[in-house]
Image 1 (cartoon, rainbow, N blue to C red):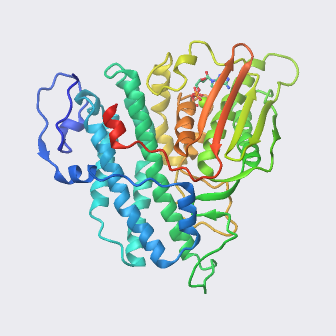
Image 2: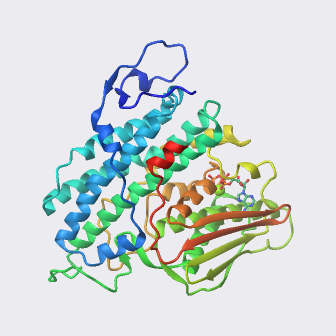
Image 3: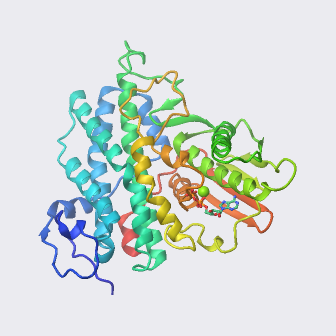
Length: 436
Ligand SMILES: Nc1ncnc2c1ncn2[C@@H]1O[C@H](COP(=O)(O)OP(=O)(O)OP(=O)(O)O)[C@@H](O)[C@H]1O
Ligand SMILES: [Mg+2]
């Protein structure tokens, strides 16, 4: 049986967590009982659906905003508590990894901060809560690269499948917390916008394209075109290649559905980026224009399905079994080295815009979001994160992502989106984690 931390105990922020584990130190960490965490871990999380997010924000009155604030105030520490407990239950050598312990400390700090926020009763209270939310979103930008590095560094210590499950759970939970936080910030902004029905008691705009962070009229074709352009520009700027493939879109071009735009842009952006890169590499020394990347959009009553087909030669055979893994595969060393450069990028390029007031009316749907650094990183900085992260995002709103590689020819990626948005977010519950 692997060693695990006793329930209800956690190491104080001390040498025990900050030193890297070499096995040479025999100093035991100081422990102390923490009843607050135990208590919060007992609380169930309350999943939400895109439809709930939307309906809730549509008739935005002061009491509704306050009740959204109180949902955030209790839901975030609950969700954080569950993840803290997951980390505590990792073997000690793993949780002592400097990258993972940094994540643990960030989560603990956020948990401690949120759990003592008193009930929100007024708009002033809400403003204070929003400040805490913004701070957390900013501080936690370093979480993904640190988690990824920690998981890779600990690959010898925990079975890889278990590590991947852990990573998936943490990432999904992280998405969920950011959705909740960003949605509330966006609703608060909407409520405070002077141009948004200033004289109306009920600040409702039935024609608004956004409700908080949810874009009601996500159009798959437009997303493909925008993300394709970004991928093409990035490649032409960073390589001398003139062999940038064209991107064609056909099928149900009018299909629209409610979705959090930054999530869809991230997935589609990563898929197109891989395809563009593969085609450029395959055709760099071949005369004539490279074959286009073909995107097909198919709308059914329940779903929107996107198929992205390229002729970039398919996925290398040695990579294929590890495509969806965060922790294993032949390129772990390069990935680690590349990831080491990402936290620095996060500080400069990934400045969140949450503190800035967004113009609701003329808001640019392709706004900067928390995924931007990952999207605009240089192409040669391959992190091996694009596909596994995209799948986490796709599955979060009850969708799916699959890849079929035709060796020597190309790749077909299938992204399925739940169109009606009435599925709950897919967060892992304590019960299923305990079963792992
Ligand atoms: N369309 C594709 N054609 C050929 N190979 C692909 C394709 N998509 C992915 N691959 C292969 O799978 C690997 C993993 O892809 P993934 O997007 O997860 O990570 P990455 O592209 O290496 O790094 P990152 O996306 O984090 O920058 C790629 O390095 C590439 O070798
Ligand atoms: Mg990629």
